Length: 209
Image (cartoon, rainbow, N blue to C red; front, side, top):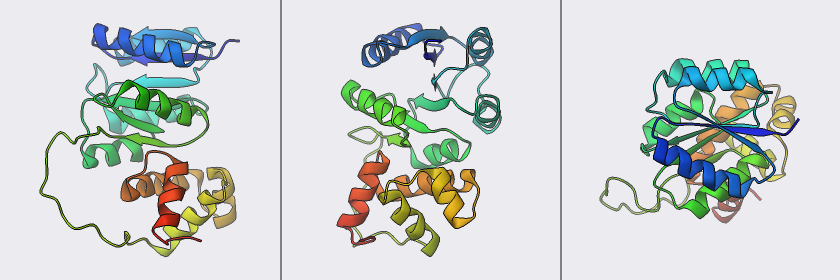
């Protein structure tokens, strides 16, 4: 069966624009649209579980603490990308901890969004924030490198060796979801959008060999 993508957003103009963008990036996939969580689930039930859900955060029927874990359990093989107008770190951390595979701010450029979705398709976790933050903060001197726990360094080292989350979990005798949370936290801490960028930044900062 043809792999599919469900684009869930209650703003028809944005939903249509995202569908056009995603359709151009993944021409071999079927596209379905939904205007609420209930409609999204009905669409998913009518077809084979999609490769990807893109879902708005401020969305009819959406409660991240309930909806995302439910989707994670119900569609374990599907990727979940939250595409939202919110781009603050606290919201991103909360959403990723609830089980999302990607967080993409609606204000990022179209080419960055496509690149992020392609990285997601290749198995990476993705966090894409806008080129300019919504709120300008006073600049602070950058630290030499972020403070990481010993466990985070272990995960980072294995990630840089291109090990999958399941491989890392097996090596460290931890659950796949624990490793997912470690990777999400590392992406935020290092300011990286993908696992590849995360490894490069870690090497540049001298955190790993």
